[in-house]
Length: 229
Image (cartoon, rainbow, N blue to C red; front, side, top):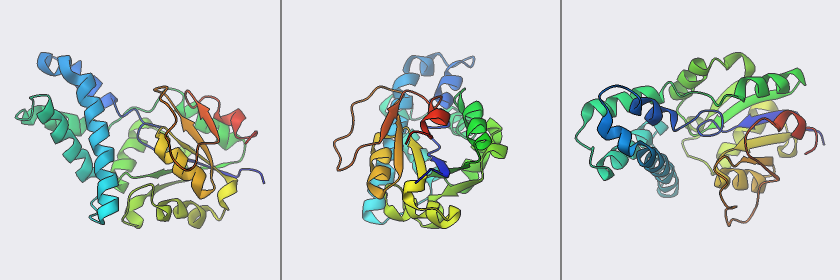
């Protein structure tokens, strides 16, 4: 059955989650932060994800903006910068303006030229996603942006993946799902999507019940790969 719909995770897949910390580190007067920014960026992202998983398990849902703030607070405190309120505010501001990876516009355009549906399925809150899409200038290349807030639970809950079929009227095997998170790609494969892991960091495959159908280093191969899955 041919693929009709290409769905992307947002943060880390289309948008560079390290961009906020990297850009802040380059600003004047941030020598202390510049020393620590790579570790802070890693800790921020890890805690952000961990908090989504824990909240999904416990049923204590909040939106992604809250876990984004909570993750940053943990990361800054761990680096000894927890009292820098101005830095915290600047990092959060920049998170609303994350850069898209450079290959994203051309890749999405190529998929649209093939007549495919394109969309985002993300843990992000709707206003956060709207800000990122607008900042990256890719809104015209997306048919929809789906947020977990409509079901009030984070990925990898199956209710989240159900949103794709409900919106686009397709079966799971008609969907190419792309994520930079190995656990997300594995869960999508278990759900029945044709899952592609954008493994930018060259990490090992997660030890989970399912594995991605394909692994790529970035998103450039997708317009060809979608014809082969």
